[in-house]
Image 1 (cartoon, rainbow, N blue to C red):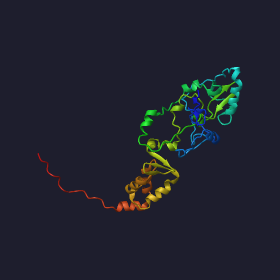
Image 2 (cartoon, one colour):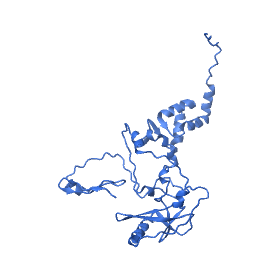
Image 3 (tube, rainbow, N blue to C red):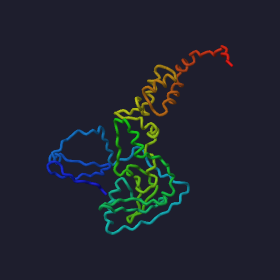
Image 4 (cartoon, rainbow, N blue to C red):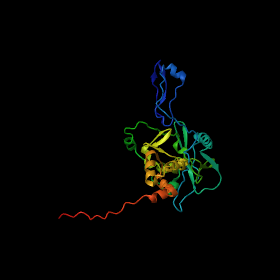
Length: 301
């Protein structure tokens, strides 16, 4: 249920505000703002990115089932006549990029669930057998208390919210759900899967930096504290610049740690230095410290 209030603003003008906005926001037009005698102030939000009708880039949620899963095909459930037209219309709007009409057989066919609330219809699946045969990832989700403790002395805070968050994630056509108007396969993550909230939605390139997430900051360039985060496409160029002075492995690794960072940087620098004949020659020419031949000091009893 939407939570809204209608306060009386300046000029005895009443405006309805939605308080539980989620990924939405309340917008006042210029004409309404002038009638309310509102003072327009510049927003403190520095960056605003919108990915409408898009999905989580570089990620497809693969439904990983156990070996020899026990799956069944369910018939469509009945839909009350009073909302049949609304349900059919909702399915037609979802056929743009959320679901797809299919006739090919699938390993499992789930029944469709309909939630009718506040004169709105929401379509979801009821994947009973699929939920019983999941290989769950048990990805640890942080509580609000754990997140709040990490914000101590933070100067910049980034919010990420998405409307219909499950529909932002692509899924392969592995299963389908039955309706009175035929079967549909989900192109985006459906509501009803048991382990969707336990999955790490980051693509593999970003999962490597999950450990350092609290040390990363963004200001046109991503930083790890005072180090610049180097993308994979620029590794070769940065390694070439670091290697220019032929400081050897330890010297080059120390120089890199002062300025740049990427996952596996020490290993990449070491392998790059070992391929350089000049570095290997200078390393061999360094004199080794001779072993001490002095007698050890006497032990006092």
